[in-house]
Amino acid sequence: MRMIRLGLCALALAGWCAAAAAGGYETLKPLLVDAPGWTAEAAEGANMDMNGMKMVTASRRYQKGETQSLTAQVGLMPAAMAAPVQAMNLNMETDESIVKTATVDGFTVHHNHEKAQNSGAVMVFLGGANQASSALFTLEYDGISAQDAMALAKRFDWKKMQAATAALR
Image 1 (tube, one colour):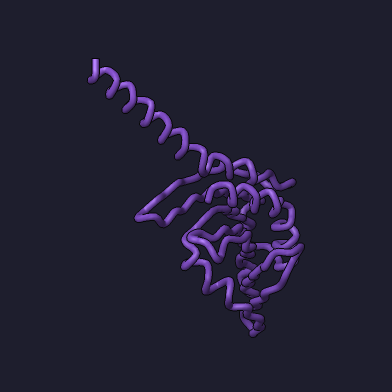
Image 2 (tube, rainbow, N blue to C red):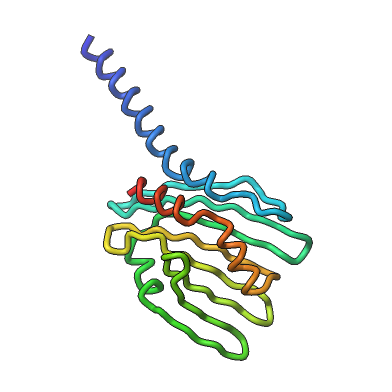
């Protein structure tokens, strides 16, 4: 009888662990919305916990024609990984690139743009820098202007992303 109870407890615990793991990135995938005029793949995700460092990510790829592409990603990462970029507050322009850090709708946004390739990344810091994990939304792009990339990044609901990632900490 004791073995049966132990077996049932083990099954219940395994089911609970699987449900908890599935809830991580699965809760973030719906935040990677469709972009009008773009063809999107299904969102993917991953949960990872290594020695207390938690990473939860969801990503989705978008394509428009042959030359324009986006990859959107939202998730948690160890705060030590995000802190250097978040603290950088760099603004720079050269013949090749533009790097800007600004506050947009209450969020710190770091934008890198390579002029010749019309490519770059918009990084939106969603919070948690003073905790074990930090939340970040990133939109990497190819074949579109810096202005169009920022407009596309703003189509995603950063406040919902902030709330969803805070619930995962």
